[in-house]
Length: 210
Figure 1 (cartoon, rainbow, N blue to C red):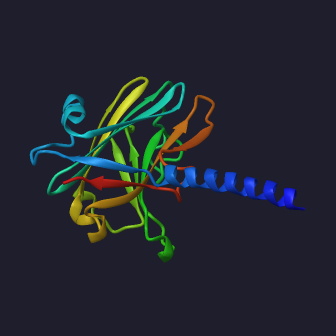
Figure 2: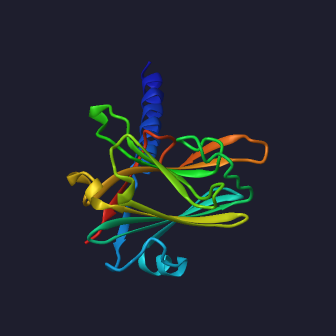
Figure 3: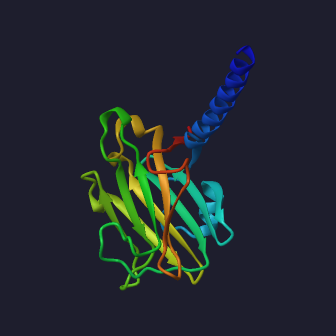
């Protein structure tokens, strides 16, 4: 009986360690760099690389995301360089761009409030060759968000400037968010890859450094 309890205790310890590792991964803290007040959402990629904090993430052999994060007194700047061997932007009419490759940013609500997170759906290109975006879960003004996109054959760079007046007071220094990469392959199969943890309920914390 004692031996059985020892084995059970060892297994419980392993499970706790694994759970702890997953929790740390899902609650990762990233830093955003302070940029000049004249920094622009359509600044060239070289300027984003030089001025912001850069994070790399590979989802598979042909799908990767490089995240750029910066801020100044007025705006939060996020940039996304996505490499994808197959890209389609055919669906530019639904609110969530379900039939297209696109990005999603979830600004997480207080878990105890059980509210839907504020979500930005970012489409790199459309039938009119312009980037589009939709907002769900908030009354943020479209005019308070500026986007820019440079699509290519197997990659795109999408950048967004969000007026910080949209953000809650508690989000002015630490922003709980989740980033999803919505991928449609050549057979029409859809996958959704998450930057933090395993799903939309997980999140990381973007810290606006002093």
